[in-house]
Image (cartoon, rainbow, N blue to C red; front, side, top):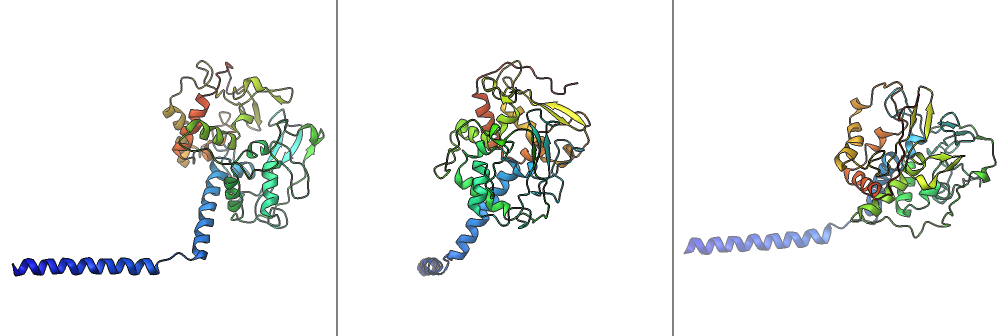
Length: 325
């Protein structure tokens, strides 16, 4: 009996001590405003890193790419430094020569002297710090629909890039820029844009597909304009110095598109290139301009959402020869 009473007393002491410790911890372990702000910025940069490198893929356009390897991965050390050449030799619809801009925080040649609002305007309205209109190979019409939070996350990430002093040449267009400005109306503000819930994979997939600008590469061009009745039906020819490749039909047409593709097959198209050994090879003329080694970094749930959206599209019959002669 005495042992039972002693055991009960010991349990009571332990319970009191645990309660006291818990109360004491609650009173002392408070997050400071500075720590909370730092945590919030770190999360924003992490999200921006993911989007800029693996979804919106800003970095692959604004860096140098190594097409001696499959899918042209970014040349290390050039991240965000610009200088990539886009002209009619790459895509017939480009009326001249355009160079991707330097988006590193270099104050002289990059965006180091730009405010967040100025960067946001360039990304979503196609207007740079000087007030000049950007050529819409920069898909600001798509970014105009992005959630403001995601846009600010990307900007926060760009601020962390290593500054690269690289003065990019001015573009050389054969037409007035007004002729190239997107036909669709742009929202004057992105303040009300929100990210669709992941619980709706089709809507969320549509959002990610827009951010990745799949439509511009995978929609046929007729007389310099997108063939809207055949959106996502592929057939654009990209002429890279060592190879030519046509963009694929990614509508759910069973004969010529993704109609017979399972979700697993779609994911494997990307996840294979999560290992460097699978793209660090020279495929010669069997290469692709699609940055699969970048998109491979997308989370499985995001790839599945894109698949769900593409499967919801209207099927378009358009047989594409991947590697034209």
